Length: 134
Length: 418
Image (cartoon, rainbow over all chains, first blue to last red):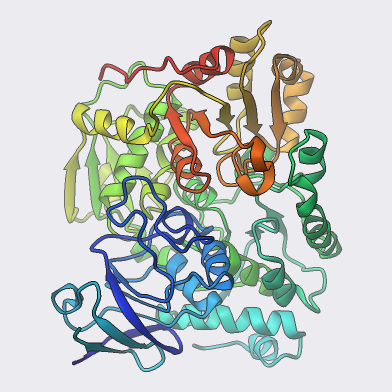
């Protein structure tokens, strides 16, 4: 199935989905050296985002998020693509500077359609999400 | 996006490759938020030591000294780290020196602080100031009424080299009205320290999805600057709040109606003792009471804060390492007062670094096997990042709790009785 969305950062990527119904900060939530969620007591603590299509609500946290995203990308530990409900300038800046294909404002409630483990394709240029059920 | 003739020359590469790349990023970011155009900056603020060297070189290639002022966020001091014997200090020297050389060539100011307003460099109401550093973004927006949008450190460098920023978000007056109202009138704030305000701000930031402005109502008018700063500063750590109107204190909120833009708020949230207690507990991430490090100065310490720490430390010796993040200017004033010497004699250190994200004592990639594995702090921001970025066990408490922990090497702080 294909869902339309608003383009944030250009490019195409695909991978297994990791779904989190909350906000995300590249700095502090993700360890750029391991690619895993590192915030103590986070629901996904210990889970790897490397090469995944990460689905969450919106961005949060420090303006150092783009620097952390850059480090994660250089280490091969960044998500392959991002889908969120609504982006914000720090998150958008992070995915644009590091080249992570990203869309926001999907036309349907994305949490009803994507589950962790589903295979998902993201086209950040055209603003399209394609879900291939597992 | 509509670009001026000059901006078309910039994006066309006529002013060099750095400005061209930076303009492309600003335009892509602006277009993703439907910004109509770019606007000139009043001044800009960057973070050269936090910026990856590859990105720094891409943005600054071929850039000449700018006509607009550019200042900078806290810096690294790898030569001092090496003097202190931190095992991996040397590996940071080369990159730091290369970026600093270019920074100086550009004629930019070495303010090296996240609290530039303490140096007399602060925006007037309405000034457009793109910047890296969410703590100064929220302070400049909220406490001075500047137009500062949420922005990352890398994008802020792009804005600084171009002297432009997209007209979007909090630059637009219609986006500055609070839609979330926090009623804190139930709380008895008579004995509150900066730590209590940090805790409240950390709770508030966590309640707001996205970066919608908030209003905080129920606080005595004309809240002192240090306390108002403590309240707003941790909001973009737990969340993304970048503009907080404190009714009766901040310039855009003389009244509740003005903070809300004469509209009804979308959400009203009451904050009581339970929320404060839970947040204070959440900021404490530790299993035994051994404290190896104490971090002050997130955001960079004011002269009054340093004075209070000096009084508490006078004549004592500390068992932990201690870092006070402060600008060189505030440290110089503390030295004239005799306070810096008292603190250093006790065993404390000053650096113009970020004591949370750039703390050489807790960062494994600087201190190696000498890394402090536990740290106490009076800042919610610092507690969050010492735990999540450095993986330290964290004790959150008041200034006094932290000084006592430094002297004893053990945590004796208690959760306040709300």
